[in-house]
Image 1 (cartoon, rainbow, N blue to C red):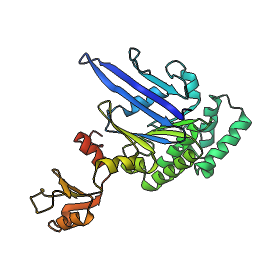
Image 2 (image 1 turned 180 degrees about the vertical axis):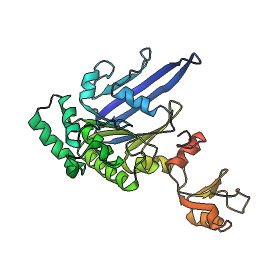
Image 3 (image 1 turned 90 degrees about the vertical axis):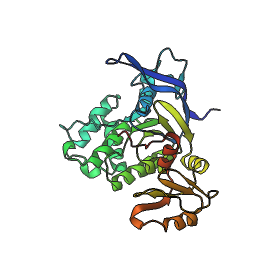
Image 4 (image 1 turned 30 degrees about the vertical axis):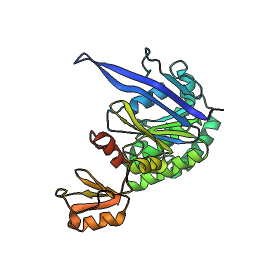
Length: 309
C-alpha cells in the first residue's frame, strides 16, 4: 500500500521570455515523493525552481501540457482536479497578504466563509487556532498593528482553518527574529506529529535541518540531490570544516588522507587534526565548525544557497 501523499514524476515548466524570445525552463524533469506525516523541504538559490514547483502542486499554475510528467496529490492530478486539491491544501505564501482593515478574528472569519464553514463552527475553529498559534490575546487587535512574527503566525492559522491534509509554506520564517522562528518550528513539528504532511521552501539551512525529514536541493530548475539532511551530510561531506574568513590557504603540513582542502576550507572527520591546522592562523581569521547543508550545496554547485538573494 502506497503511503505517499505526494507523487511527482518528471515534471517540467517552461516560460517564454518576451524580451529575448527565448524559452526559459523553470523546472526541468523533476521527480520526488512525499510520505504522509512528513516534512519535505525545497532548498536552492532564488530562481532554482522551488516556488514554481510548489505552485504546480497546489494548482496555482499548470505544468507543461506537452510534458509526460505525472503529479498525484492525495491521488488526484492537480491539473485535472484543481478544486479538490486546493480544498485539502493549506498555503502560506511568501507575502502575508492579510486584510489590514479588519482585526485578527475578522481576518479568519472572512476566510472561513470561502470554505462554506458556518459561523458556529468557524468561531470554534478560530478560537482553537488562535490558541495554538499563541495569538489569543490578539483576537480583537488590528491586523496592521501586529508584529511581523504575529502576522506570519496568523497566516499559518488562516491556512489551517479548513483542516487541510497538506500544509505548503513558501519561506515561512524569512525576516523573522530567532525566537519567532523557533516558535513556528515548534508548531510545525506539532502539526507533523498529528499526521499533517508539510512542504516548505527555505533559505535557512538550520530550519531545513531541524524540521525536514527529507530535502531536495535544486539549482537552475533541476534536482541536484534528495534525501534525509543528516544522511546527505554523512554521505557527502566530512563532519568538520575550518573555514577561512581572512587570508589565503597556504601549504601547511597536514595529512592529505585525513584532510581535504578547497579554496577556502579544510574538511576532516578528525576535529583535532583541524584544530592543529587552525593554530597556524590568528583566531579572527578562521571559523572551526561542523559542516552544514550550505557546505553541501557549495560542494555540489560551486555556489552559495544565498548567492542570488
